[in-house]
Amino acid sequence: MIPIQFSQAVLEWFDEYGRKDLPWQINKSPYRVWVSEIMLQQTQVATVIDYYLRFMSSFPTLEALARADEDQVLQHWAGLGYYARARNLHKTAQTIFTEYKGEFPCSQEAIESLPGIGRSTAGAILSLSLNKRAAILDGNVKRVLARFHSIEGWTGHSSVAKELWYWAESYTPKKRFDDYTQAMMDLGATLCTRSKPKCIECPLKVSCKAYKEGSTKQLPTPKPKKTLPVKHRWLLHIENDEGEVYIEKRPSHGIWGSLWSLPETSFDLPEESISHHCRDKLLLDCEVIKRGEIIKHTFSHYHLMLHPLQLRYITDIPAIKETQMADWFDSKSHHELGMAAPIRQYINTFN
Image (cartoon, rainbow, N blue to C red; front, side):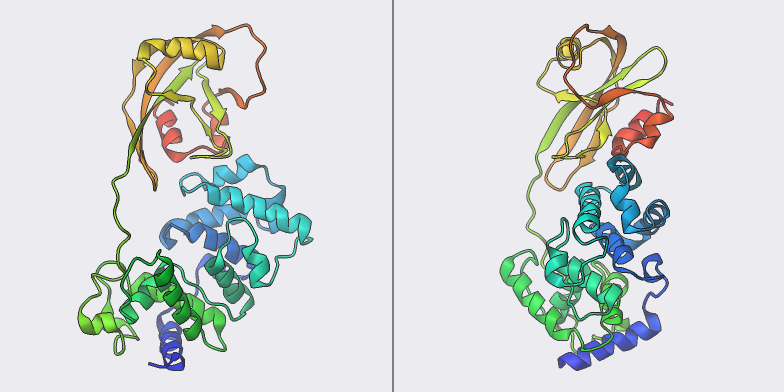
């Protein structure tokens, strides 16, 4: 199948079956498409829609996002995971507002230079919002092309990615760039799915090598599996007589960066030494009441096991405190903070 036949088949299918009423397809702009593309990284459309609508309601323009407080942005992101996306989104909005006078750049090179935006995302922004010719290679498109050409090997390997980019560029037509880009996304999301692809309904089945060879279950080649390490941490749930909980802001780097959370400490520390830790590190005099149920959370590179300890606050330790982002919050005020979903769920069980 020559490129023009490929793109024509995809576009004809899109005209009849493609998605045309997603929130970011209405009043399209680089800003609206960019936010949707960042949210859709690692997250399915059905999950993103409600988050996107709330986000746009609070930050309807790039300027509104640039001027927003980081905690506001992270609060709207809580539950989507991969919080570096939200921090980069906020940082990029500020960069565009200050360095590009609030106007979203319109070249591939300029867009790719912004935090959190790679080649495929830049291509999606250009094609979907400005109808410029630019190829994309997100997970859906990788799956379609890997099966169509029966390309073996994990798509994360440079040689495989290079071949997939070659075909992505080759098949991008000379017009209707926005429709073609959306069509390829839709094809992968609705027909050429990871499991149980609907090959009979696919407009490319006549020339699809994986369909002919019966290898759709094997392609794309899965990422090589590795055993994830398990990390254990104490999670300190300190509550005072007014029902307020002691919460601190995490560093900007690392997991749940810049989010608010309960204090943590090494699981190597004996439980009987936790009170001493609170005195030395938090400058709080506390006593352990009881353990809570373990909170299990999996990241891309390890499993986290948080062991909650409920502590009763007695008093502050008289000392000169270094500047730190930590304070007491009641049930209402902590809901206004950007907080990782597992931590908020845990705290909410006590309200």
